Each structure stands twice: as structure tokens, then as C-alpha cells.
Length: 267
Image 1 (tube, helix red, strand yellow):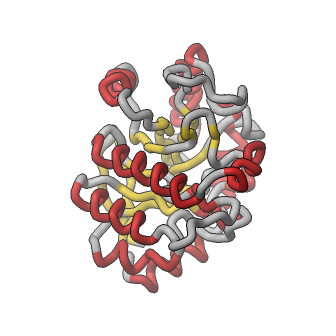
Image 2 (spheres, rainbow, N blue to C red):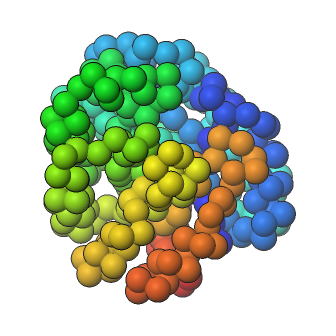
């Protein structure tokens, strides 16, 4: 089993030392994990209204070094991959591609956390959901998500419908938005993360939810699991339950990465 979505203290909103995460994964019997912290957000056209979102640009080399050192230290016990979670910003595609060339990651997650100056999945700004049109918000969010997928900058689409985290949904739902995204994921040979952190959020669902699992099989969309761990004991959370549901839906393989090349392992 493997968990590809593990954060570190560098993002300023996670706790515990990196070795604590590895040790907890070993306790669970995992054979592979990937650290996947937030890429520095210095490139945003509007500075995010929070100082606890990502590492600084100066810290990025140390983050990379720390992961590589852990990989060497634990190499006989567990495989450790170097990932990064990079936010998509419309109009910055070429810039983002050039940023990724500077460092060799095993995989790159694509995420959307900000719309203008609103961190849409941050509890600090939950009241803004009461002050906006949910229909317009979801349309705008998924338009950005579709652009993220089509950009082919990213290997993995992260928590695709995280906008539902606090239980706010548009009047007609958002399944049509998801289906359009699934079609694009299949067309662009991107991997979809099944993010289990939502089971511990208000929405109490994975991102995307279990009702979509059969649709992923129908469209032959490759998937992997991510806990979005921000504390050591969150590594692998809800994986066994989620894996069982995926298997019932017909998913038989998960994706693993190395040097941005994907391979498949049987569940």
C-alpha cells in the first residue's frame, strides 16, 4: 500500500517531523509513501490572504534535500518518493512548466485552492460561502479545474471536488462538472487522486465521492490514493475502507510514480 499525499512542517499548517510520518507509515505496513508539500506560492498574481499556505522559495531546496535524505536513510524499509503539490494559476502555464524543470520530482500534483483572494478550502474563510452564488462559484472552480487538466503540466489531479468540503453545493449539484472533468482526465492521460481527507471533513466523503467510482472504471481513469496527511497519524487514513469500495466498483490497479513516469500495481 502507498500514500502519495503527505505534507510536512514546511507548509506551516502541518505538525510533526518528517521522520514521524515515515515511522507511522511503517507501523501501518506501507511499502511506499510520497511527500507532497505545497510549492511556494510566490507566483500568485494576488498574494494569498494567509501566511500558512506553503513553504517559501528559499525553503524549497531544503525540503527536497530532506526527502532525499529520508529516502536514503529508510531505503531498506520503505520507498520514499519526492512529490510536490502545485497550484494551477490561469495564464501562468509557461511559468509553471519552467518552474518544474528546475527540480526533478517523482510526481506533480495539480490543485486549485484559491479563487481570486479566497482560499476556498480554508476554515478561516468559510463564511464567504454564505455571501456568494454557489452556482457561479462551482462553475468558476470547475472551469479552472478543466484548464488545469488540459494544461498537461500535472501528473495527478488533487482533491478534484474539494470545494464541497464544508457541505455547500450548488442548486443543481455538480455531477455534470465532474463528468466533464473525468472526460478530460481520460483524454489527457492524467491520474486522478482519491483523496480520503474529506471523510474527516464536514462533507464526510472522499474527493471525489464513492458515487463516482464506477464512472471512473467506465472511463478507464487511473487512480491513486492520498490521505492529505497534515499529522503523522493521518497517513493512510481510511485507506482500507476506500480500497474495498474501489474494488467493489471494479478498480483493480493503482498508480505509482518514479521520475514522473507512472506504472501500475494490483490492489
